[in-house]
Image (cartoon, helix red, strand yellow):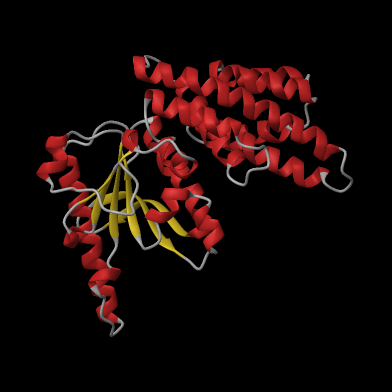
Length: 312
């Protein structure tokens, strides 16, 4: 369930990265157990090149799996709860196969990947989690028949292959990953989409009061990504505006981005906010950029008033 801004970011971020590779579903219900998994993923026939672009994350999702990202070190009781979800899903999978007259080999059962910033030796030893040859440092597998591993993000090597997982880390690890993300070429296939997810997280954090120290630090780190994304989006708009026949598609994409930001900022997108999104894209570029910068600090009423004033 989505309890904090980072939880929602992690689920939407992973879903967005994985959708080219298969069916990614967030907050999937396990009806028998009355639980939800954060991200359920089932791969399709995506090319190996597409999978390799995600580095270690692509390696994790080669088979059907659950992804459970944690902002803080996972308590023992939460790890047990995630194992309970896995066993319930495996039972559902076996029943489904049986109804179809099939058998589900042990090797094909869904796996569980716990994405945690850190983990103590006591926790790793208590669950019998151990590293394996050919896997990156920081990946610890529970005994074979548990089909489970902990990915300790702050122990991962700082390489391009681990970047997409290190963005889910904390403090310096996440800040370093953001710097690496911004240093990627502007035409990198994943860069702009991930910047947009980080921008939505920034808007969500800025709209909240009483942030703790860790959240305030994260918000400051996100300001850099936010400004970079804003400038590149405007620059892209200028370039696309020069291309004949592209204006309508650009306007639609811009409207959808504004609607997403309004929904993140105010929690829902009603008819009044949808009308604002349509009006927003008709503003001069300088005014659009000004409003984008002001959005985290504007209340709903203040935003509506600005557009009422512009209508006069």
